Length: 185
Image (tube, rainbow, N blue to C red; front, side, top):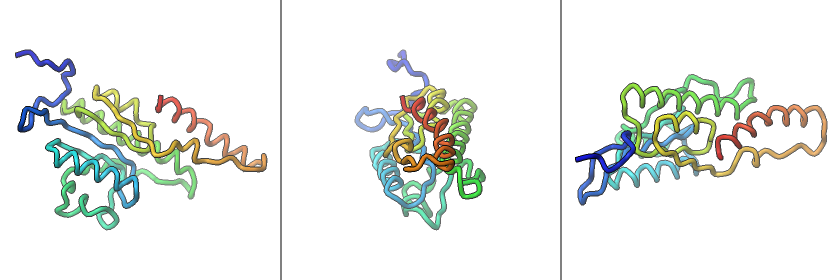
């Protein structure tokens, strides 16, 4: 029987009732405690309860500061993959957005490498918050859903005065804003 699905990366397993079991990879910067994290954990639990295989990829997961489902004997505890925790979150209390982008790029590069090495690309990928790794994740051949709570570009407000600090901040934000625009389509 030829595979009716033209995407060779898709998981051929099926669930009871003939529905296809999917492998879903979810990417989130920091799997701590917050609204965005609750959304990701709730979605992952719902997908898993529906019979799908779920992997949560993150750059940081502190078992002392996370939702119960992600630690110990929690529903998702064995499905969390942490890569890049050694990368800085900030440099001298600054450059948080640059560091977040670099951490997520590293995470995506590791996942791309593993997908190629193990030939285990996901059926679908969900990327939350930081759009920078989108091009790398798309290189796995799997569809990507990017979920953005609110673009960074719109979160950062311009300084009222046109002084040196405002100009430096605008210069710092320029490549980040362009990258965000390019990777969100």
